[in-house]
Image (cartoon, rainbow, N blue to C red):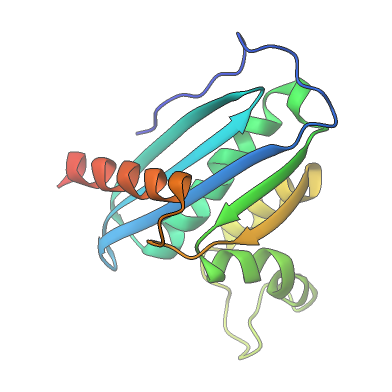
Length: 164
């Protein structure tokens, strides 16, 4: 279940303007009840998107948050050519998409330990969106007072409480 995001009524984006994104995902138990959220700041407005699943993992929720944010941007044609700064508190997702994924693809979606990459379908979606957009990945420390990262965490908690 997800909230919707729309940029349709927003003013035209300058191609030089950077879209700022914050994402977060979490779980009560791992696996357990999970929530994901993102804040997309574009065209002078911050839009929130969130959702959750009854039985999932923290890593799946972190990936889903990033995929949801980038999908919202990609699905808004006038935003596709804008630079995106994606702020994420998950080293797993940041390192996975910026570094590890190259070897995973080269090795037929196997890890360096020759085991199948977990969440492969989500990694493939994220990789496709990352390649279609101009994304800069930035790690931020979670629970450190970063305004929109904290907001994403709040939204995750709200989504998890709906499913409890």
